[in-house]
Length: 275
Image (cartoon, rainbow, N blue to C red; front, side):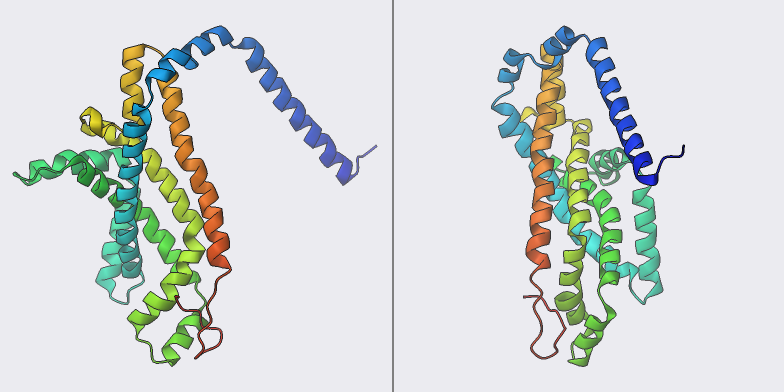
């Protein structure tokens, strides 16, 4: 007897639950929990990480990420405008940049900036903060440029036409009408890029640094070598989650806050301009 569509869906759902329970049970019985506890949950080793893992590792990770994201945001917006330009050379340069840096691993860019620039330009010594700002920003801009371009193109054409009918120049229309609305559209993907840059900042360990410049991954790796325990890695991972999880909530908060505030121009009903 053939099952109805509803019953068939119910059976499939319970089969999935059963597979999940079976997998969890196999892992639970097969794992050596005493060794896992000793390796990952050594409270004495965890206590030794504080407060340095916060005051040094976490703080530096946030600083590196913020610098890279800020630079990438500005560069990404410029690249997006170049890709939408009516001047062919601007589109070609921006397109080549996006394709080139989206195809390269972030590690290669960090090494190229951190060690390549001083080699290519003798006498120039990049501070680690500057090197990471440039490297992370260069990589992030290649992705954010496409996000910006999609957001700008998603703004209704009528908004641009209404602004131009009021006598606004193309530049003023872009700055006061298009870009603010595009930001509302692209907040979620920008937050995702911020999370990715947070994790990419872990590659800073390949540039070498003093203890005051350690980020979370480097801090965890050094502590791992010293303690011969995986607990520092777990602590570093929890610190990363302390950054990325609030970012997800911040994204939703910003969506609610900006999505509900559309300011209509008194001169042209339906035209949304920046406050």
